[in-house]
Image (cartoon, rainbow, N blue to C red):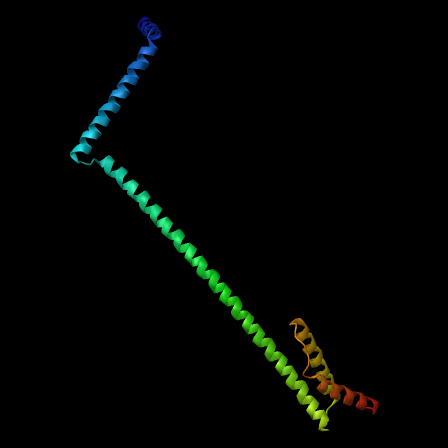
Length: 174
């Protein structure tokens, strides 16, 4: 038995491997040729195998996915344009609202200062805190004008009346 195994190993050592390799390659080429011929015949007859149908479906899926991706990219670009336009409109609206708010604040401060100056010029009684409050409002008014690059020209006379009366009352022991 050992001799039989040794003889098999010796015979295996004498095998012509290049011819085995060529034979295997020839067989594989033959199988490929036969399958190509079979595929060609099936295509000519208009038949479809399960493998061909699977390949076709995969190809259609890839094409469909590519089309959907292109549509999504186009939609994304359109959405981004709309978003940019919306952002620009929002910025414009916020600027308008800010401008309206600043104008309202300025008008309210002017009204308050002018109203107080009228009270002072009419001789109505005013306490020290009212004068301080009005002077503080005027300082805020000036700061608001400066921050918004606006000029004061409407309440200088009113403030002069208030300052003069306040100084006079302080000298009298207010």
